[in-house]
Image (cartoon, rainbow, N blue to C red):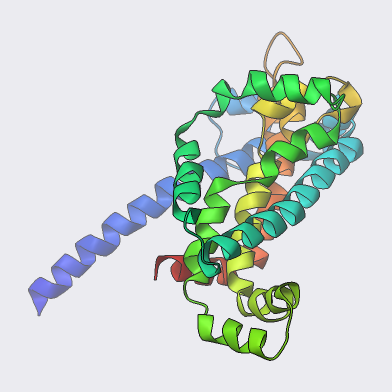
Length: 271
């Protein structure tokens, strides 16, 4: 019994240390937003009184309302369109019979191995030819067809009984009615998990918006943080930490709001 308690104590101690290492960067980020740059350089780990000053200076160097509006518009539209397109594609791959669907699906999965950096030039040429450069559409369109989300939805659609779909077809229900009235409501946790994934990817997207968004008034949050980092010759870490904290709040709210459904959706995809 004592040996079991000993090993249990060791286990909890290791987990506690791991949790501390995981939480500390977040704590340091919040503390840094309340301190001056000099305090952060000196390694101060307690809360300061410079948060309001950092916020005021941040509002002077960046249009926060416009930046957050741009990011929210891009992220919300990306999430809605991405979930619609990828879930319908995954439903088709899983529930429809076709001689070549597995080959096509395999090609989709292979595309995940292609680094995005190698696709930027062709994508930019496509957006330039369509006259979409420096617009929100140029950021949204390449993010809609996420191969990972197609894979994720298909794994979850395997759990949905095909017999129910066939029974609905016999009763005369159309395919869109079956999908939106039966399948989607039954897979709420899956959609919640996909929403968190798609929103975080879109909100934190940096490289592609940096390439296609050329006007300062169309900057997203990540571009704003980058601009703040390069604002002065000497980095103002208090200002940078404040910008990062503000940029983190929306993703934190989304995750905490859908945490339970996210766990259920991720577990369901593995079954």
